[in-house]
Length: 177
Image 1 (cartoon, rainbow, N blue to C red):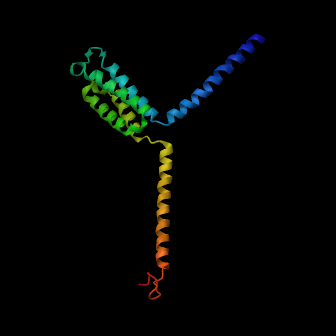
Image 2 (tube, one colour):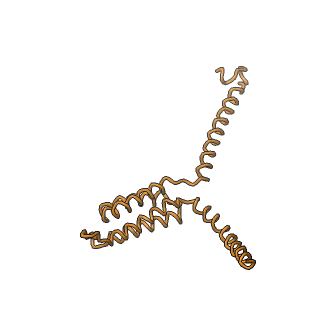
Image 3 (cartoon, rainbow, N blue to C red):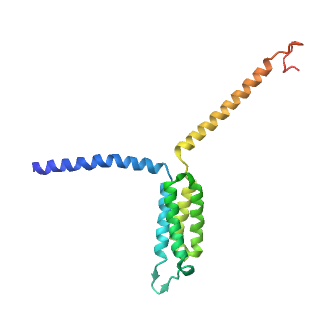
């Protein structure tokens, strides 16, 4: 009994320390990129790939043009998801390409992976395009607001400065003339 309690406390302590450092790091990493959209895009590619290799009962599903589209489109979707996850700076370009490929898969690849792959790809592409980093969005709004405020303060100060100047010749202000 004492031995089992001792071994449980030791085994519980070791994984907690190891996982405590990795999970917050992963969460911080995934929040700085369109993670969910990229995962949905990759899942769409995997689903499209496996749907192109299926036979449904008596229905034999034909591959695209000599099987080329049934390989290239799913691989392209997975690559777009990975690139989005690894390089979020280019997210808008990758998201638009993922949307185009997923809509094209409706025609070129077994109704877009029996509609499931197309829907996953479209939702993932929309999430990729619409994602915006939190720090840039907040800082951009603050910077824009502070620039507008500074510009109006500078404009008011220059108007006050012009109005207070006195002509040396006739003693009137510039605003009077």
